[in-house]
Length: 85
Image 1 (spheres, rainbow, N blue to C red):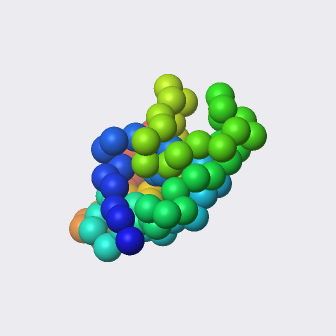
Image 2 (cartoon, rainbow, N blue to C red):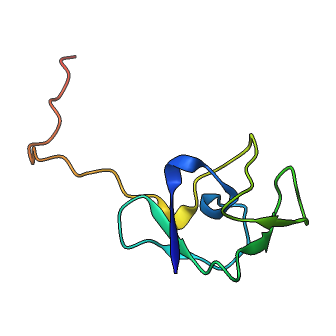
């Protein structure tokens, strides 16, 4: 297995790429098989064309949904202050 950082903004970490991959062991990385690194672009500028995940990029990159981390919860359990009438 190979790994690539999301910071590179390649097809591999784009939500539109249809190749095989999985979220990496380290935060903000994607793991993939170097011998199977191709997938179709889905609904992007290269729609329905085979793209090499770790090498190709475009200007319409969208982070892969599986890599999006939820926003941290607030440490303050108090309700919001009411506004005066």
